[in-house]
Length: 250
Ligand code: 13P
Image (cartoon, rainbow, N blue to C red; front, side, top):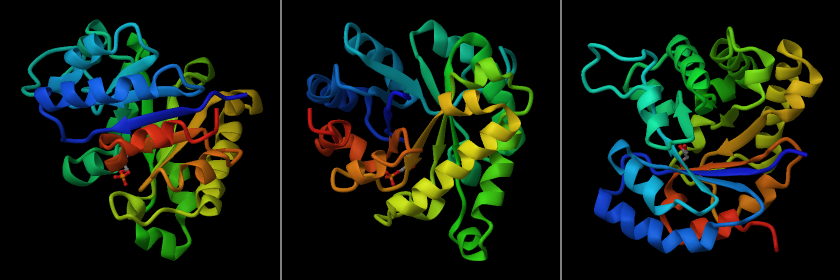
């Protein structure tokens, strides 16, 4: 049985002062629940988040990482730097990074391998545009993204990582994929993982859904057999996040 994982992607929100207030407000409400909970915060909030969340079950994640160990890469942050300050997860290949910052399937793959090598858990984002959905190529597209992201990643490492299926048309739009649409693609990703690895490995990899997850739709989405939680944007900054994390009655 896969443990659910619900991660908040804060994107470029919350100064350190604002982050402190939000973490203090949320932490008691989303701690020690039946799912893994992760706050993926801006770089400048990471250390503070790690300190404030010490002693809780809530983990901290970054939103990007560089593929090299160190060197002349002005403005970048390495996997080892994240690891050393206590970061556990890292979002890789978010569609906003692909769209605005030139992230490619190949750079995603390099970042995934580097992160795994230092013990960080990648949350790899994949997902189609509205054009691709209308063309009927969603599964094909997501398979290619997944295949390239995982090139050279052995099965024992793959079991640790998380894949987030985030249809681009559902991000920040209030338009959520139906639980049926989301389940169809997440199940397709799992079948593909079984093809490139094996059934057992595929059954261990957690697949999240992301895209306008809210307190109102979390339960229906997360109860689908191949959806192992969510990557939550806007609602992760609101009191509503408590409702999403506690989507199942306790
Ligand atoms: P929203 O939940 O705001 O649609 O964002 C989803 C997302 O991009 C999470 O990574």
